[in-house]
Length: 157
Ligand SMILES: *[C@@H]1O[C@H](CO)[C@@H](O)[C@H](O)[C@H]1NC(C)=O
Ligand SMILES: *[C@@H]1O[C@H](CO)[C@@H](O)[C@H](O)[C@H]1NC(C)=O
Ligand SMILES: *[C@@H]1O[C@H](CO)[C@@H](O)[C@H](O)[C@H]1NC(C)=O
Ligand SMILES: *[C@@H]1O[C@H](CO)[C@@H](O)[C@H](O)[C@H]1NC(C)=O
Image (cartoon, rainbow, N blue to C red; front, side, top):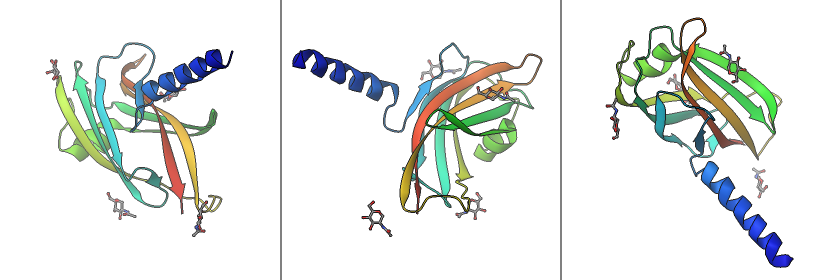
């Protein structure tokens, strides 16, 4: 009986670590044409009130059109915290020295984002978040090109 539980716990740990490797991202369920091949950010953990620099490589098989959107939904313990939709071409593609329409190819984007603070933030505490990021070409319906989910920690000084 003890062995049985030990095995279950071990398998759970394995599944957990494979689905969220260290700098933590997984492809969303489904098939998307432009797959993220690597993802990292610094500092890790992220620090509230400071910038975070992200480095993301994407293998584009489909052209990214002008007007593409970048949709990030953030959760804390399964509870929706915020949803931000921004201009993917302007904020990520151009910020990294490329332009839209972005032809098929392998690209590495490097961009910074400020980790906001609020007066309600806890002090000297690390909080874990989950988020889902979708990149979509405009249209009706829009075409989701890329989708990843990730788990990350933010330190509130
Ligand atoms: C964060 O980056 C922006 C521009 O990328 C810069 O204007 C700002 O000063 C930076 N903020 C901090 C706290 O480093
Ligand atoms: C953004 O993504 C969330 C989660 O997948 C989804 O519910 C929402 O409809 C999306 N918003 C837009 C504008 O695409
Ligand atoms: C991107 O790189 C991968 C492997 O390095 C390669 O298989 C793929 O064909 C490349 N994609 C494009 C669109 O060039
Ligand atoms: C922050 O928390 C840690 C442990 O939770 C504690 O050791 C440390 O003294 C705290 N630092 C401050 C500045 O309160």
